[in-house]
Amino acid sequence: VKSTWEVFDKDISVLSVKLKEYSKNRRTEEASYYTGVDRIFQDEGANRAAHFGRKFNGVNLRTIMEKAKILFGDDGRIRNYLLEKEPTKAAMTKDVCDDVLKALVLWDTAFSKLRTVDPTESDCDEAQKTIDLAVAQLRKMGISITPKVHGTQFHAVNQMRSIPGGIAKLAEDWVEQYHQAGFRYDLCYCRVGDLKQQAVIRSRAEHRARNPKVVMRKELVDKRFKGMRKRKKDLVKDMKKQVKEELRQDILGQAWDADLLNLY
Image 1 (cartoon, rainbow, N blue to C red):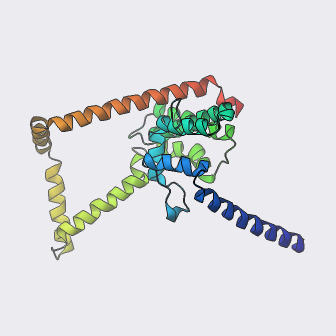
Image 2: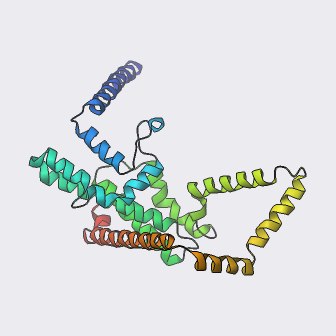
Image 3: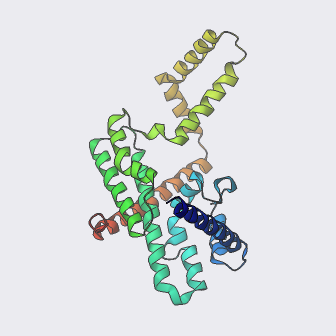
C-alpha cells in the first residue's frame, strides 16, 4: 500500500509541475484566449492579485458581478471576443457565457439578500431560495461545491434568522470599517492621557451627533446646499441600481422557468 501511495505522490507532483508550466505559457502567449480575456477584465477594473496566486479577490469579484452583463451579456465584451476568435464554436460560446452570466447574477442577488438589515421571515425565505438557485447553477456548470458554498447554502440563512438585525453588519467590509472608525477615534483622543477621560469625551461626541435636532439640522443644510453635481450623481446611481435589479429579476425568472432546483 505504501509503495502505491508513493507512486501516486510522484505522479501528482509531475502533473502539478506540468500544470504550472502550462499555466505560465498560457499567460505569456500574446494571442492566447487567456491573455485576451484577462485584458478585458483589466479594462473593466478587475485585476488578478499576484498575492492571491493570480486569482480574483473579493473586490474584483464584486466588480465582475456588477458588470456581468457588460462582460457576458448578449453584446458582452468577452462573448464578442470569443465569437470573433472562434466563430465555429458560436453555440458553445453562447451557452458558456449564458451560464456564467446567470451564475454571477444569481450570486450577486444572493449576497444582496443576505445583507438585508433587520430581515423578516419573508426576506430569509427569499434569500434561501436564491442561494439554492445559485448553487444549482454551479452544479449545472460542473463547478465543485466548496465548503464556503456549502456553508452559505445550509447555514447563512439560519444565522440571518437567529442573529438580531441579521448578518449584514458582520460582513468583512463592515468589520474593516469598524477597524477604521476605531483607528480614527484612537488618533483623535490619543493625547488625552486618561483612558476613562477618553471614553467620556468620545461618548459625549457620539451622543451629540445622534441628537435628533442635530441630525435634522444637518439634513436641512445638506438639502439646501447640495450641489447639482451631487444630485446628478445620485440620479445616475439610482438608475444603475434600477437596471441591476431588473437584470436580477430577469435571471431569477429564467432560473425558475428552467426548473434548476429539480434538475440539479
